[in-house]
Image 1 (cartoon, rainbow, N blue to C red):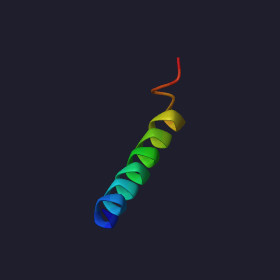
Image 2: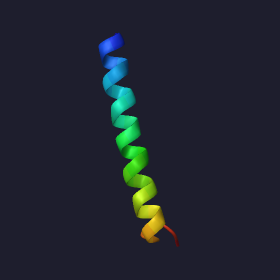
Image 3: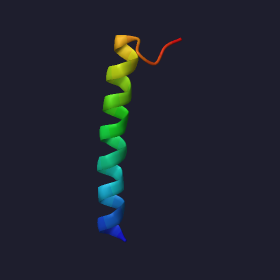
Image 4: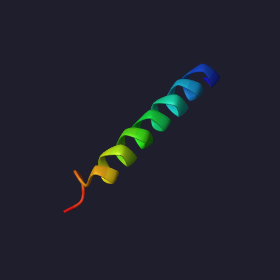
Length: 30
């Protein structure tokens, strides 16, 4: 379960980074 949590944590970090990147470009801002 800890391994899964670590993977999920890394995935969430990547998603947050990508999301922030697109928001900064204004792609997700309407």
